[in-house]
Every structure is written in C-alpha cells, then in structure tokens.
Image (cartoon, helix red, strand yellow):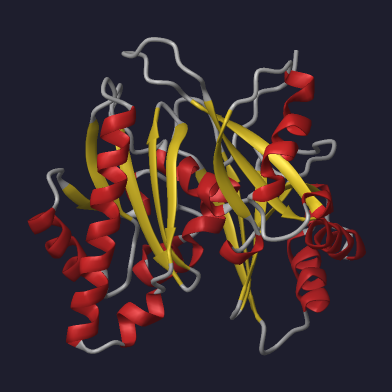
Length: 316
C-alpha cells in the first residue's frame, strides 16, 4: 500500500528514494515460483546533480516513462501511528481515522495526507477491537513530490514508506506460520519490523544511524548496541503479549558493511531468539546486478529495493 496512487502502467516496479547523498533507484520484476529479479540499480550523487537533473538523467538512461513508479519517503517525512480501528464502513475509514489523529500529529490534521493499513489480529484470542497503522504525511510534501515527478515525466503511482518496503523483504524470509523480526540500519536510522504471512504486525524506528555505529569509539558503540538490544527486547515482549499464537522464529539483520558481525554477536548473547545476517543474494535474483554482491551496496539500496518488491492484487 502507499499514501498516493494513480493508474498503473507496465509490470514490475521502479522505486526511487531521495537520500542525503543522492538519489537511489531500483527496478524489480516478480514472478510466481521464482525469486524476484533486480533488473537494474542507479545512483545520482547530490553533489553532482540537481534533483530535477537527476530525475531527467534517470528517465533518459532507463526510458522509464512507462514504468510503474514508487517514491520512498524518508524517516522524517511521515508519521506511522497505531490506532484502534473505528467501527465504521470501509468507505468511511480514512475520514474516521483522520478525526482520531487530530491530537496525535505535530501539525493540523487538515494539512495531512492519510492512509491506513490493517494489522492482523491474534487468531488464538477471542475477538477484540482490531488495530490499524495510520500513516500521515504533510499535504505540502506529497504535492511537491507529485510535481517533481510530473516535471521529470515519470509516472508516479505510489508514495510509500520504509516500514512497508522492509516488510516486502521480510516476507521473503519467513518460515511458514511463524513471524520474524528484521532490523536494518542506514543513514536515516534503525528500523525494526515484525512480519508474519507477508503482513506487517509491528514497526519501530530508533534514532541510531549507520554513521554513528561506523564512526564512534568502542565505548559509544557498546552503548548503541545496548540501546538497540533494549529496544528489540521491548519490541519482542510487546509482540509476544499481543500475538501469543504467532511465535517469533528469529531476528534477521539486514546487510551492514562492517557493522553486522559485532552487532549480531552482541544481540545473540542478549536475546532469546536466534540472530542471523541477511545476504540479499539468498532471496533475490541478482544476475543482472552483480554489483549487489557488495554488502555496502546491499545496505545502501536495501529499502529502495524493498519498495521495488511491492505486490498489488488487481481489483476484480
């Protein structure tokens, strides 16, 4: 799902992410019974191009005017909140959620674009009020993104969020009938998600960025590891309380160049679930993008690849 959608075009998804160091883009194709294929990747450094020039160069290099296109928001561009589902018909849901968010946002709710995502209930418990993720971004930001893509003649169908992009990758790793936690670290911070059956059950952001882990001294790194562990323990405890009948199988660490082994060792010593590290080559077809053998590139492109793995069911 995304915050904004238009009529779709050709198959597969191109995802574009605006990062501090430049623009990242990935194009993926999925087929039933085989690994998703990452067809190509592109990066345009902010030091060398304006945003408009980068998007224009992307369109010229890949002839992307007919692609289905998703733009991935940054962590600071939106808020994702858990709310009780209001007892209203489906066609009134967003309006009812908007009313509930009026005291939860840090700006007027009338200035927000809002989307909702249902959260599965625990099958082992008696019926209870269901919950939703409410995703809100400022209208001004959404309108600006639409205008930027229109100017570059790129067909923007969806504006998406990192939590859902990470969900798309997590869904490829799940043992049947069991949940997994997935943790990624990039220059925006740390993201923890819990998924089962391809559904997002839980998401939490931590303001510890890759640069902090990479550049800090040993004492500071130990403090960061301790904080990440504490947040994971709290997240897992919450998930266990809410979803007794959905066991958590493991924690998976997204690719992190030079950072994953120390963090994995620390987490393994302090958590009750197995901790694994992910190589995207184990779940994706990278034959057309051999550069993704690099852990550094896997880390940098991780979320934009996740956004390009989106799947949508056609309406009947």
